[in-house]
Each structure stands twice: as structure tokens, then as C-alpha cells.
Amino acid sequence: MSSQPEARIVDLHIRTIGGHVLSLQLPEDAAPLRELFAAFANRQQAGGGLVQLPLDGGRTACTIAIDNVVSITSTPPVLLDLQPQPQPQPAPEPVDVEPPTLRKAEHVVIDDFLGVDENRDMLAFALRDRDRFKAGTVEGKAHEARRNSVILDFGRFEHANLIANRLLIWFPLIARSLGEPLFPLKQVEAQLTASNDGDFYGSHLDNGADESDGRAIACVYYFFDEPKPFTGGALRLYDSIERGGQRSRAESFHEIEPVNNRLVAFRSRTYHELMPTRCPSKKFEDSRFAVTSWLHRSATPLPDATFGWGHFRCGKVAPALT
Image 1 (cartoon, rainbow, N blue to C red):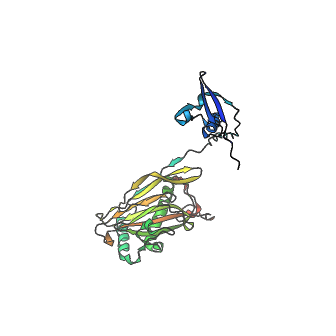
Image 2 (image 1 turned 90 degrees about the horizontal axis):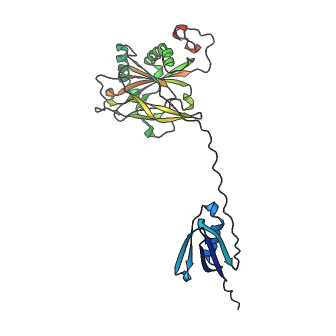
């Protein structure tokens, strides 16, 4: 039965910077021998390092910095199949990225939007038709996204027409204040909401869904009993960050407190949020009421429309208002 031949002993002479020589013996199959030559062969790629070599039969160890090694002499010669470490790839050149732009949430506030009697009549309508209010929902989102009551078809009532007609008068000034060129109107959409204790509406956009793509400007009109029977319920308008044609919500914002007979207008693409309302009595009549109207942009103007009342589909305005 044949036996494996004993490994040869290799005499090593390691010359370091400064002319110092370290002499030792290692079996040619010893792991430290391979580690020594591998580290020496790849020291430029690996950036140096430390190698520990056994002395006196392993009773002592010598640790050397491989960067300080000038040469290694071995007797008999040591032939090792050392695979060089792959060269590190240079870091890619930085690509010029368009710096983000912070866009402020522009808005318009109009106090005393309706007459005193008109304002009171809006509250009387809401209290008289309280059975028409249904729980507000957000399509495709969890219940946690919104909690309030809403009349979705409020636009078919005369009270919605009252606000819509008043908005048509203010439309040129609102558009100009928001920096929007006057555009042809297609319709004025309206909803009526009631917010009671704990009600809210999380951060969202008004023109994100397909059915609301035509919404250009959102207008929120507040009305409620006085003195104010609730707290909270502020409208939070978030700034936006634009980069590379994409827009996202910024952390900065502006809050507008609900004031009776106040209207707030802003672009429908603005991220906004209804902050929680606190109504200690929990009575419906003590709710924060709001009519949200959306001015829809028409894809095509009416070709025969001219300046004047009721002709906003023309997308023009009288010279005196430009």
C-alpha cells in the first residue's frame, strides 16, 4: 500500500523595506505559504494587508505588513497558480441630474364670498337635507384614507348653482392669481361635505383618477353655525417637489383655517389634506360644512362664444381684465 510523500520544506527569505531579511521554513503545502504569496501577488489590487507566519513550529507567530515586502526568495522554488484579483472598475462618471424645484402651494382666499342671507340659506339647506349625506369614500383606498359625510350629487341643486354662478364671476381673477392662463370651462362640479368629530381626509390630489382628469381648479367654500361649534378642520396645502418631469409632495405646507363664508381656491394638482375636526357635541348641526367645486378645463372652446357673461367656454376674457 503506497503512502503519500511528505511535503517538502521550503526555505524562505523575505526581504523588507530597509534591507531587513526574515528567514523561516514552511512545508510547501502549508496554508500560510499560499497566503503569503497570494497577498504579495495581489497587494496592489487589495491595497496591502497583514500576513501572519508561524515560527518555531507554531509556538511563535510573526505578523508582517505585505506592503513592506520587497522580495521573497524560496528554496526549492515555489510555483503557485495564483489568480490575480480582478481590477476594480472605475466609478461611473456622475450624471448631471436636474436639481429638484420646490413649488409653493399657491392659493386664493376670498372672504364674505356670499351675502349674509345666502350664507345662512346654505346652512339651512344642509340641515334640512341631512338625510342625503352618505359616508365619503375614496375609490381604491382603505377606509382610513377618509372619514366624513358627503352629498355627491349636490351639483343638481340650486344652492350649487348659486356658488357656481358666483365662481364664474370670480374665475378670471382666481385664474390670474394662481398664475393660470384663462382656459375654456367645460363644467363646474360640486360636492357638499359635513365633517364632525374625528372626521378627516388624508393627503390626496383631486385630479388623479381618470374621471377627474378635467379638474383644473378646486374651490372650497366653508359655512357653519356661529359661534364656531368645532375646532380643527383646517385645509393643509402641501408644496410640491418637481424633478425630471415628475412631481411629489414636499414636507412643507400652508394651513388655512375654516372661516364661515370663506372660499379657498387652488390648483387641483396640489396635494392637500383635511385635518381632523373636533366637535365635542357630536351634533350634526355643529359640523363643519364645505362645498367643494371643481372648475373643469374644456378640451375645445366654443367657437361662437365671445366676451361676456356665460361665455367662459371661449377661453377669453375682456381686455380690461387682462
